[in-house]
Amino acid sequence: MNARIERINELIKQHTNNIILKDLSLKDGVFITIAKVDTTPDLRYTRVFVSVFPEKEISYAMKTLEKEVFQIQGKLNKKLHMRPLPKIEFRLDMTESQADKIEKILREI
Image (cartoon, rainbow, N blue to C red):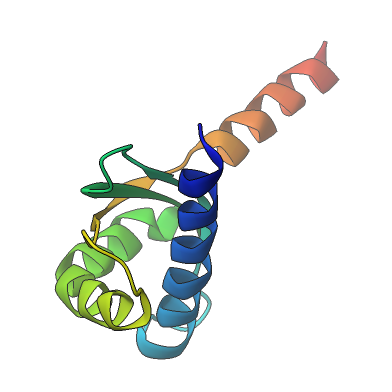
């Protein structure tokens, strides 16, 4: 991955995180964290990988993100000074959850 894409990923991560924290209204006790951002080399699409706590609220959180994606996209577009503006897509990141399961299995052995 080149340095430009890495900088863009970091910029999108920061701005999207701020938008989610400030502008997205979630139920009390539900937290969404951006784990990783992956932008295509042509800058047309960005996959934003999120983790959700608690895990039982994953469905609710993902539905909320899907419902608000256009609002989030609009606010992100105002903050990014670049062309083309990548279209964001939210994906669930299960890395942490899977790591916890593996760790639990290893402790049992």
